[in-house]
Amino acid sequence: MPRNKSGSTNGGIIGKTNKSSFGKCKQTDQTATGNITLLSGTRLVKAAIISGGGGGGYDRAGGGGAGGLLNKEFNAEGTVPVVIGGGGAAGGPGSAGTNGAVSTFNGTSSVGGGGGARSGTAGSPGGSGGGGGGASPCNTGFAGGCGTACQGNNGGTGSNPSPAGVGTDVRASGGGGGAGAVGANAVTGAFPGSGAGGAGGAGLDISPDYGNIGPTCSVFAGGGGGGTRISGAPAGAGGTGGGGVGKSPNTSAGAGGTNTGGGGGGGDGCGNPGAAGGPGRVIVKEL
Image 1: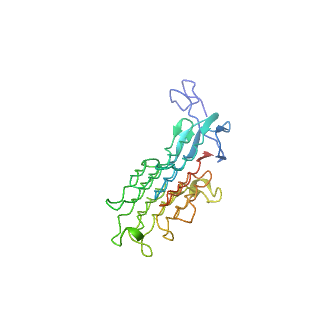
Image 2 (image 1 turned 60 degrees about the horizontal axis):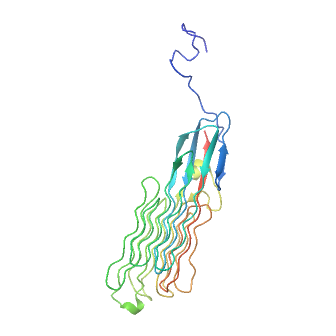
Image 3 (image 1 turned 90 degrees about the horizontal axis):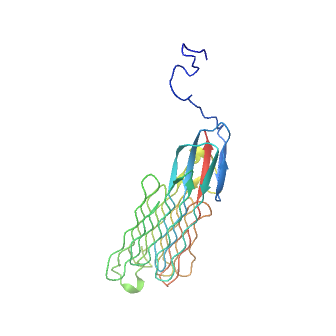
């Protein structure tokens, strides 16, 4: 560039020289806490920060909410610290699932997934909210936890008591929210009949930004399914992107997928726990 009258090669702009980023679209898929060393010319990156999913609750319990998925551009250069959040534990006797731990890139974090409720309580808030617990015979179903804006969605509501009577009443729980959709509400009813746990909310497809990564093809942060209390009554399916299936008697709850940020499935009505949420992940594309 020719020099101007002041001798500047910066187009006459007073101040620092404008720096362009030359990251060459290099990608790093980080599944453990550590550091990422960026290319020497990188000044700008796009990063998907996926926190750990919430654990499913205990005893006719809500599915865990997915870990928050924050996908945005950042100014970054050199060596950048990354923290990968673990999945939340399943709830112990009489307890809700634990919220997932946060994942962090260069000092910015998404929110851990909300734990699924135990029976008769509301789901926990989080990146995506945990599913709400099913009703007792004398009250209505409980609400799912709230999700975080631009990171996830609300959990589903537990079902109300069925007019069919206590003996066959499913009184199921809601699904945990996912990054791409809310958790489904549980379906009120008996079994045999319509009663069922709520499905976990779908995860978010980030393949347009990063291509297909892992067995979920870049769909991450699905919610866990809600549990039921009657053997044979369908528990909630896990949300696409790593959500775990809910539990009914004689079936197993599914854990959130490894490094998907998926929520764990909720427990059944026989005093059994749900499953843990999945650990998170950070994906970085140098621009």
